[in-house]
Amino acid sequence: MIQIEHLEKAFDGYKAVDDVSLEIREAQVFGLVGTNGAGKSTMMRLVSGILKPDRGVILVDGRSVYDRPETKKDIFFIADDPYFFPNSTAQDMKEYYRSVYKGFDGGRFDKLLHDFGLETKRKVANYSRGMKKQLAVICGISSGAKYLLCDETFDGLDPVMRQAVKSIFAGDMEERGLTPVIASHNLRELEDICDHVGLVHKGDLLLSEDLDSMKLGLQKLQCVFAEGVDARQVLAGMKILSEEHRGRLRTYVVRGEREEVEKAFSGIDTVYFEILPLTLEEIFISETEVAGYDIRKYILD
Image (cartoon, rainbow, N blue to C red; front, side, top):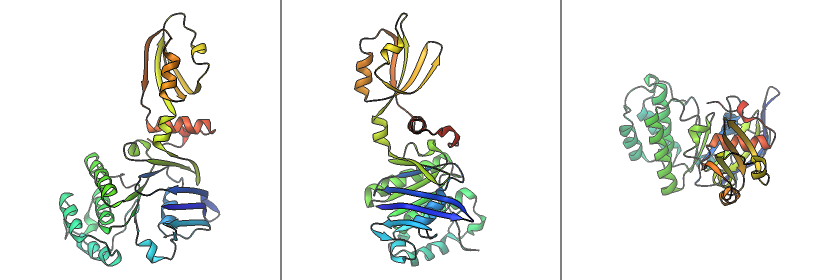
């Protein structure tokens, strides 16, 4: 588990990370979401031990990270713009990471390189941006590190490759307890893979929630009431987080269990009634608006 307590980091007087505390549990996908400049990359570099915190504590499985090589061997950081040695090939990077990570799987590296269609002896400098991202992922997976920190890793990958990477993550989570931490500016990108999501804005952690718990307590419903039905009376006992009217069609996001909503509408005369699944973006909009934030300012499509 990664434990972060009261973490702070400033650059030239600007606080990139401001008093952040959170826990990242093992064998789950943790999504760190926020606009560019929100502090995601700085948090990743702090957790991986690249940067030293100005204040606060970071523990990886109970051990501190900064200036601790024995802890860093359990962590692999994939930067938004991955670094490779000048004039290096994929084979060169394989040999380097093999010397750093004792559990590096050279056979798996070769297989993934072949599966991804990357050339072993071609200069990495001549790879496209997407190919460099793929190579970085291959290095990270092959390292055998328990924690894989991915900063905008899916940005630059085509849809097929994105699904392939997600599938690899899922397999390693089941087989060896991999814990991916994925930073992204796009909620939709993380919707089908994350177990837990944290929202960062201007260095602050606005929200950190388990997705299953959030989904259980929120319901999205659409309905068309029959003539003469008083909508206010029907909804009087519900906590409405948002509502939208388009003609007679009404859409609500309410807090409560599904059974409670169905019971409230069971005796109501409606032309149309349906409970719909919420998107991750809708969940975050509802939760953060209650807390006094307008998440629409923070989310980039």
